[in-house]
Image (cartoon, rainbow, N blue to C red):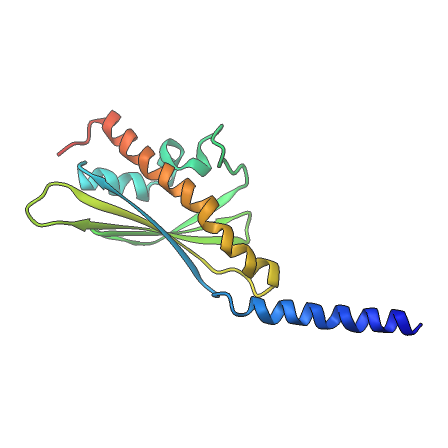
Length: 161
């Protein structure tokens, strides 16, 4: 009986310690990737703001892609301007990601940089917070592929200025 009591108390304090350590991890995570483009900016904005077009470039929505997510998603356009598009995506009714695309134009150049960022809010549970350490390896690689796909789709569509 004494051994069981010691095991339960030890397990409680171990879980408490893991929870306290996980609280040191950030409550919000942002991953960002960028690409230089020379395409017509309104064509890029249309491609980003039209969620039906995501099946052409977004790796999570391309059937057969290693990042393909067959789960249902809902979208809410939060902001759209000539320099920023922000979209809230909810997967399976509960997992929410805020995607944003920022345009950075350099004076004297027709080229611009398209920055894609994704904002995550992991839950307070230890495995959710610690799991956020791996977002860069999964989402970061997927975002790089998505930016390359945007460039390819726009090149095929002939959207050069």
